[in-house]
Length: 216
Image 1 (spheres, helix red, strand yellow):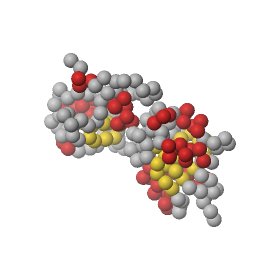
Image 2: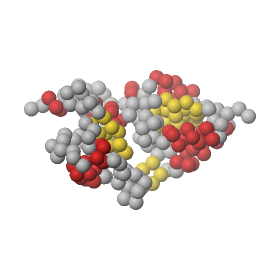
Image 3: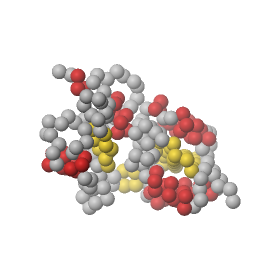
Image 4: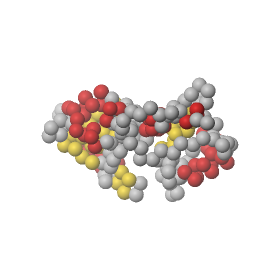
C-alpha cells in the first residue's frame, strides 16, 4: 500500500517573509496541514486550494490536541496516501517535538523530511538589536527550555554549567522568570548581567534597531 510523505516544517518566528523557500514549497503541495498555535495564520494562505487544515495548538493549561493524537493524525493521513505538512512555529527541532513525531513516523514506515526554520530564540533578540554572539561580548550561546515535566514546572538544568554561558536564551520563561534569575545568580552569574525579556513579539516589518550595548 502506498503512503504519503510527511514534512515537519519550521514556519519561522512570525514574519511570513522569514519562512524558508523549501518550507513554502512543501506547504503549497500539501493535502493536509497540521499547524501549531504559534504559526502566523497568514502563512496558511500559501496552502493549495482544498487543502485540509487542522489546528493542533497547545496552551500551558490545555491542549487542543494531545501530542499522541497529533502523531496518530499524521500517520493516518499519510496512510491515506496524502502529502502532510506538520507546520510548527520557529524551528521543528527547537523544543518542537519533531524527534517524537519522527520516531512515530518511522515506527509506521512513513517517509518524512524535516525542513528547518528560524527559531525565535535567535530571531527575536536579533530584531531587537541583540545578536546572541558577538566577538567582544559573547562567545557562547545556549538555548534552554524554561519549564519541565516536574510537579512545579520549573526548569531542571545544570545551573552551574549554564551560569558560565555568555548568552542564554530561555524559551517560554516568563512564568518561571524569578526562579531562573535566582538560580543563575546562586550559581555565579553576576547580578549586573544584562537581560532582554521578549513576549508575544510580532516579527513583522524590518525596522533598523540600534545596538543596546552602544547606548550611553
